[in-house]
Image (cartoon, rainbow, N blue to C red; front, side, top):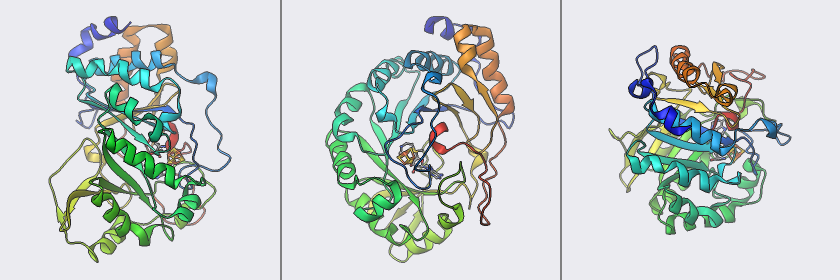
Length: 342
Ligand code: SAM
Ligand code: SF4
């Protein structure tokens, strides 16, 4: 199937949406399941997608071939916890052929770090070179309060093992009101001391959790003021394929990224689409527009697959409408971040 997909007449027809944005970045949630229950991400009694609906890795590989043939040159695997899905390493090793062909620049991964002790060497060997690891605190009790799991030591050890195995690491930290807001400078110091860049993230109103978003949300404008008490910050032109705007400090060569979906919307530069583990393609993290590729893929109709990608470009929304301004507010979308992959 891969050959057929790659050799269609659409091969060189790039992905450009109706706002003129070139789409070259695909994020895949390989599973929405997770061994943690971060309070801003999902409730303790999370209802996961039915297992029977999942795409197989072979089907994901076929879809990736199609998207790569249409101009996707970077893929990030996320979840849920991507390392928790069996068969992931073989999937990545196989997908890495597109790096050797020169079609993909890289395959990266976002993880909670809990399985890095076991899997970081395999990740490196499969072709991954950079990972994002989510870590919101360095304090054991707070780690438990945030993730609802007592796993800080294992995560830190996993991060260090990944570094020893040659993986470049960026730390992702969601800033949470009354939780880690006052610890941000310590987390930055720790990350930079270990030669990791760090991105700070605003809580997004996706799906219901057991907590009100207004009790979690902090604007990164306020966080930056806190950081400036300790560091001199300077703007940089550094850009990755992601939404972070990066600053340097006077104390390290490492970067601090600011991901500000609420306080400073970055949708004008959006370059991505997102595939769920059941084959739905979402064009925006914060909107519901989607196309279900699973049944089209299973029908094997290549023309329809390609025209569905073209349709996806037409319906990609201009922007999300995230807003956290009052108590008991409905989330912008009902699905949780784990469904579309952060
Ligand atoms: N389980 C992996 C992890 O935690 O890194 C990958 C999936 S997780 C959904 C990806 C990223 O999304 C993490 O950095 C996480 O902190 C972030 N995230 C989850 N829910 C979020 C929310 N509601 N608002 C902002 N970031 C969120
Ligand atoms: Fe799991 Fe990641 Fe969500 Fe935490 S943020 S519950 S680790 S998917």
